Length: 213
Image (cartoon, rainbow, N blue to C red; front, top):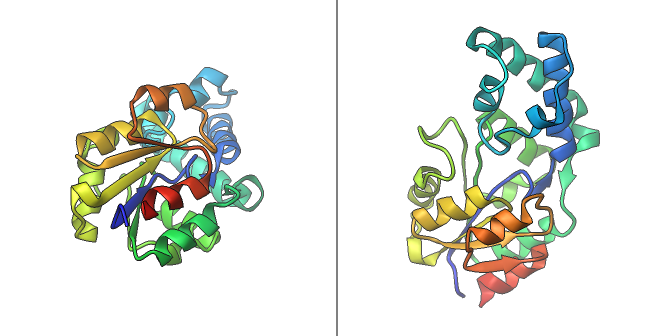
């Protein structure tokens, strides 16, 4: 077996949540700021922690209300606007069956991360989850990946980081692990490939092949 541990990004890699995140963001802006969010605002700093995204469009004192509105919309719409990508659950089942330890490495908040994993029955596959509340620096910093390695007790050379965004690849490379661009759901294909991943996975089942060697 080529790898003993596999780290996964969450949104855009395991879960197709683009419509959910977009709608929750628009709802928060509409509710709190009393205006419509532009497409540019919705996509600005995509993949970074929510508080940073909100801070790019609002004053600091407005962020708690925006965050509350976002969270309410996210939970209310979750069941109809988000789902695991086809083949993801089977891929996790196989990789776990090979004896790998698995972790999620995400810039989401802890509560949202566990809510997503539990809602889709994915939590049972993971030994750890590193969220934006567990680190001081976020992807593309190596800190979240390094924290996942610490929690899993995994060696850099025996670990694969799988993600759909350049941030995932850059964080993995900076932390000294192997990297794979997950292209089955990415909206950043060119950027992810430009980050020079060690491997490319066009489909979730490609991850099984990478791990098994």
